[in-house]
Length: 432
Ligand code: SAH
Ligand code: SF4
Ligand code: F3S
Image 1 (cartoon, rainbow, N blue to C red):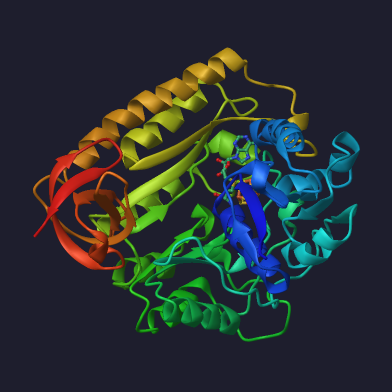
Image 2 (cartoon, rainbow, N blue to C red):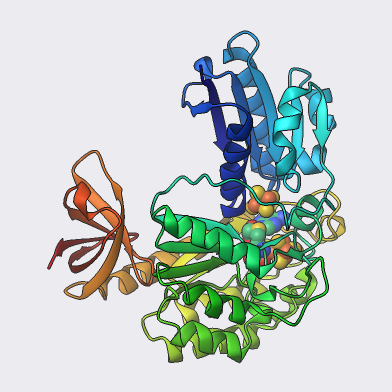
């Protein structure tokens, strides 16, 4: 009889992909059926995030909840970035936790389930040539890791300490994985890494120069790949060759994440981001001039230590100039063992909250303007989700979400849709 697995994922797309790998690994040994009911689960896993204080607090509140509701003998495991970061301390704080497996140790999950008290958190562990079995949440879209870890040391960020040094997965393994995903129906490939456009700098073996641009070219040669997306590229590594490929390769979705963090060159320097306000604006202008329909998303941190009113005005200025289609905005959260956490000039929480609200309000205006431009246009949509109310949804080539009335037959198809209505974060349309 199959066992039941409850798995909760916090954090980013990389964690979501790790969850798929965890499920694939577990299924090699035992038959696991996913359940959304804690009470029924034989194995309960939480795949954690450390990037801000909030998800770490959530881990401990969730663990208490798991322990209360689990059935007798159900095991509890903690995976992901907070596992890497806190390791055995998690078991000290919550002794009912059976095992801890870090973000760089996913291949060890089956062993860990077998042995109570296992803590596998080596951030130097090399999984770049380990071939995980296939499992994915979506039939239509496949997330594929292209690198592990991060070679930057942004002063606010805990990720290099939880995911280790950057290392690239060999292209032949990536291409094989993509072939396999297309054979089981995926037409959209989502490439993942902390700095995807730094790809190829760090292979674990000696090989000829190979870049992210080349990887994009090689992936687009696979016939059944119809769309390619990636996250996150780093603004510093957005060279002209990369922008040229982004613009001219028809298979690459015309949506790009360009993480700003701050518009102030002084704050960017304190963050150790490696680029200036002018470089960031220049890259976005270049992308927009080559791809007029591009949708640009970004990440912004407000209230970084030492951020003055003037610095914050620079952030608003960049938002006004670029007009982002989507902003993921965060209040700075001090993380243990990072350089920024030792800075003395913290911004008052009230001021940080006000700045956050200003970003949100300004962005709403831009979103409305940008989404309105879709009305009456015909766009090509790849449908991937059926809603209980009879609507079906998918994404345009520049990654705006579109809802239409339709049936299951549309799933997995690319269909032209005329947009009839625009909302702030999605569109409504009719099949043409
Ligand atoms: N490698 C990616 C970022 C991964 S973390 C990149 O460089 O774009 C995702 C986002 O979380 C970051 O872009 C940043 O905006 C935010 N973030 C990271 N550390 C943070 C902190 N200490 N406080 C608030 N936000 C943070
Ligand atoms: Fe963190 Fe910077 Fe690396 Fe992104 S590039 S994961 S923000 S250290
Ligand atoms: Fe992702 Fe959170 Fe780790 S954002 S890299 S899961 S700290």
